[in-house]
Image 1 (spheres, helix red, strand yellow):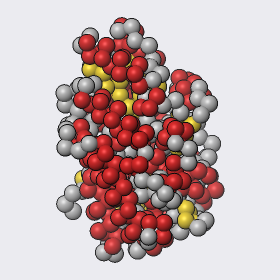
Image 2 (cartoon, helix red, strand yellow; image 1 turned 180 degrees about the vertical axis):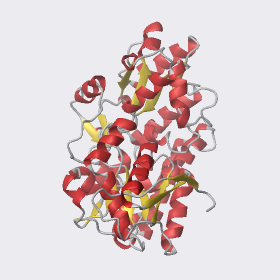
Image 3 (cartoon, helix red, strand yellow; image 1 turned 135 degrees about the vertical axis):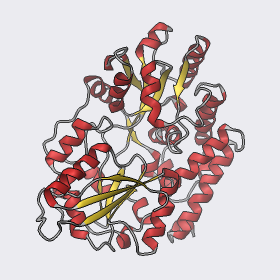
Length: 424
């Protein structure tokens, strides 16, 4: 199938009877970076135990949603499909009540994190299994040695942050590795500080969700975009940021070519590996995305989720696979073998892999707030388009006002398609 990168794998379920299912192949379709190598290895183990093979079909992020919906709407969906969770989005974007199987009676639901369960349910019925580390999010990761060599303190405001970036630039160090080439990363600067928006504009979440205000009405949202654009225009992202890839983050951070990036804490170990012994995990630290002088820890209770397609001919086998990957052994395997996974939202007696510094960082904040893509209706489904708009802002084809107006326009279109009475 054109557009897919096949990544062989296999079926699952350590509890199911493989007698009738042996030799069956189930398909799992997901966006790029939603299925890790460790899960594919679990798929192979699942096949060995059950005889059910899993065909992992991975689609580029900018093509995934349109390709998935084409397949679902034509009645030819994969047995399992990936989707970003969110109590609003799973209805308006994926129509899970029609397109997915009610999984409420599955064994793993008893161990499922309540926050994740809420964001993958409709009218009390669970439709998806989140398979993503929702316990940490993306923060600024910085190289302590580089900061010390350049006599830079950890910034606590946007002005301090830009001053640090300029000092690094003046001393020949590229401040920030910002990989825009994948079409998803840069938007998190804007959306991750949802807690700060709510603090500065009390009630903004409810007002946006009730269509009482628009993105373009909020000066703080414009200011955040303008600050993000300032970082790009000042050269702090380097010369090749528009084509830089997220997969190269470890290499560039490991060589010390860049002083900072925005990433998950679990990725620090990959920087160390890429450094060839130059750095240890203690050589890297964390602080919050500094737009709008942010001081509120960003939390993200949802993430890429697995749904069983209601039109599948292999619903039982697909359910077996979800049961398998959420078992105690599988959850621990993911934690132990995938750097991006320090924990998963299932209480099965696992041992998380948080470093002491990560735990200290997470415990150091009195305030926390949920990222905007989880709380604002009709925002997450336009992630790809919003990311493209931010690039257009970087290259001068759009202003911050244009970006906000485009968000509002797409939200209105999605709300109309969903029959949202608040937009009538």
